[in-house]
Image 1: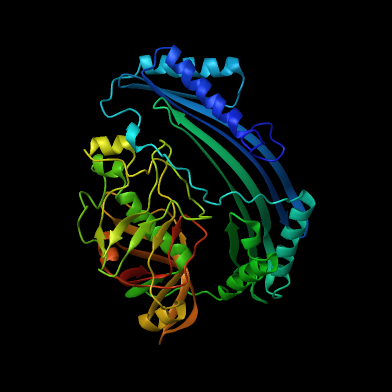
Image 2: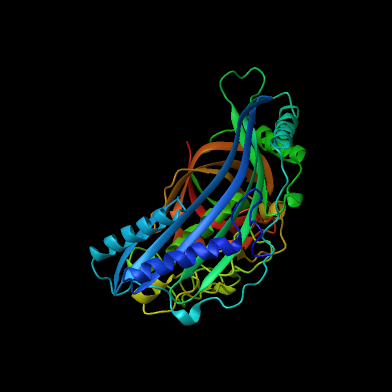
Length: 453
């Protein structure tokens, strides 16, 4: 099995890729490195884009790359290449060693501790190849866009539809003797269209929808993607501005993940040891209301971001990030952990499958609970100050009164401070958006400043 190509039409088997990693580590050792780590990856994919009933692009990619990091004591050097030849490997390792010899010592640098390396490699069911031909991908894209364009006569233009399928495989090893490998597939479809009211030659609106999964059989149908994209676009027609006010705000599920992302950024080890977080030294503190629970599930079967080990070979595990509203710890790789005199949390490379526990209310119930306020379905700009927590972003969505959506709104700015916004979370909806790394339902925040007219 190990000698079977890990990706269709590839000449590389798992055994061959592991052999390359071991070759890199041996070369580093021979050149005097006191420690080293290497990663080799290959990827294959197909992407198709269609617009206005015509095929715009068909792209196939077959990529490969390797990277090596060497340590001479506490001095570090890294180098990479896409050439797997023996000569290129020697040159790449030599380049990393030369860099390390000119790099200042950093007492916090080095491999993750040997005893933390992953020992078990569970099958997380991440590989589901899609036997997708360019012709079939084109059919799916055109079907999705056609469904959107035919949904309503007010759909007057299209930004296109896309279909993609990718398969990757990665091997990582280090001089502790650890070598680990895993692969995964990711498939997606999307559609974006433009709408306009009859007789209105100036105002247009656009919106989109997409689906993503490890297994193509779990994707939403192309007709569903097109209809959702068109429906969301039509709902935005006739958008108004509202007067500046203080009001409750619902972040729709696909936007709510941004709030949680800001929290994750604030508890990352790098933000903590650099003293550049609005949640500085917050471990053990109440940051959210006591009903809030947030956890990380890196070993989730078929999870979009599942992995048996992190980018340093450390075994991943389920962990609580927020329990009863209280921060349980930071997001650490080995470097940040040493800076903070703690232990890595197996988060080299980031978090994996973050889940926000939700209640039983759907979006309509959240609107009723809010009674009057703003439902945000789209956000613009990057107005988040991670040092102070000040938050100010452009927004569009819907105005809600008497618990019911009244009309679409646009050209707004929502502002507040994330520390207070987190405390003001009222409820999490059950309309969970599980397409990304952060899985959360809509979030109702009790009070924010909305700047309009």
